[in-house]
Image: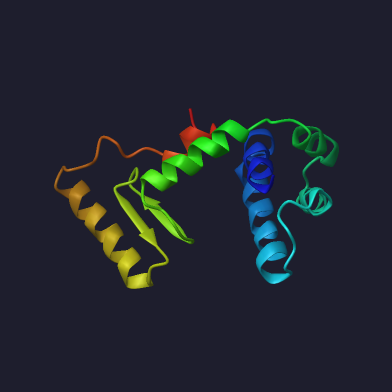
Length: 136
């Protein structure tokens, strides 16, 4: 339910609210030990970041977003993503899982070099944004 709520928040309230909700849910889960399927906790978190809880509750009563979340899950499995944090860079060309700063910087430097040498990937698109409906 938490994934659907964050996805819905991005579509209806914008990425700023969605990211604030995501961050707060991570605190609730990883720091406070709360369950991400706790409907009351989800709605309290939504209210805390300025999301209309009546609308959020109504959405949670439906299957809205369920198919997109399932498709995203299958896609990340195909990409070999199996941990967090994971960085998908340049349209999926670089998938880094729990890397150190120097590895992340090296990936960005490689992309910069490719762009400077005219080797920009045609597939470099917002991978998850399109799938979840944030980007057309």
